[in-house]
Image (cartoon, rainbow, N blue to C red):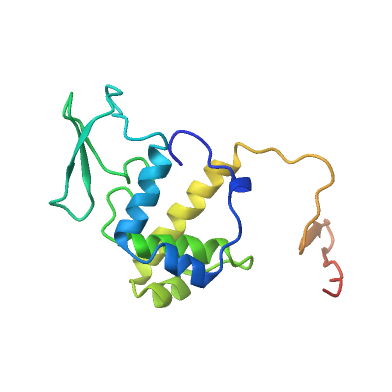
Length: 169
């Protein structure tokens, strides 16, 4: 997310109740992003200085380097950059998206988050793009199993659809 891949092996599956407790406020979301962006404490993106001033006059905390005065937020360089949608809604969108293997529609997300369809569509688009960028770092190898598949075989004369038989769960 921030210059390095966040490995999924480091995270355990979280229930909705656990998620809501951990990311209930904007401050909790900002703190999580701060720790992801600067795991060893603040470091200026321009001069690598470690001391900063925290400016709280905006919706998101602004971090100003005490040496070169470069200003940054925890959302710079992420899908959240320049968004007007709250971080709690973004985090919940990512949670919902990642916990449903069937996918999440923009319409459903707009209803759940109480945002417009256009906002929900843009959020899902950015989330999918970010996940696609992350997946470029991984190559599949060995035996690969799929839960569901839809295979199409086209011939000159006719169209044949092969649908696998689902095994009972």
